[in-house]
Image (tube, rainbow, N blue to C red):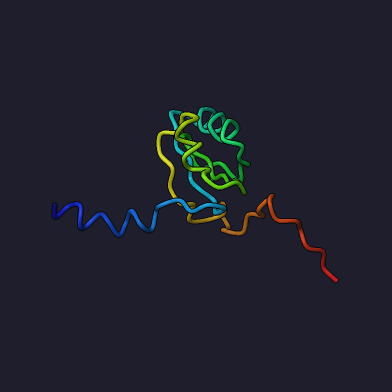
Length: 96
């Protein structure tokens, strides 16, 4: 019970939210890409050998990822190496 109390805040921080980027982990990055594709998501960046940073505008993306074969899904805490990866679901703005 004490361990659960200690891990609860971590779960709240790492819980995926609808519309936000998520970290998708699977047996390989190819398996993660397959899960993202089946769940109607967009790959934003690679995240090591076993994961991808992905996003979907449709609600319930993390649930669809699990149904599509993802092993774990966490809230995406960055946008690539720089943290500034452009989100393909948001149109690019032109400079004046």
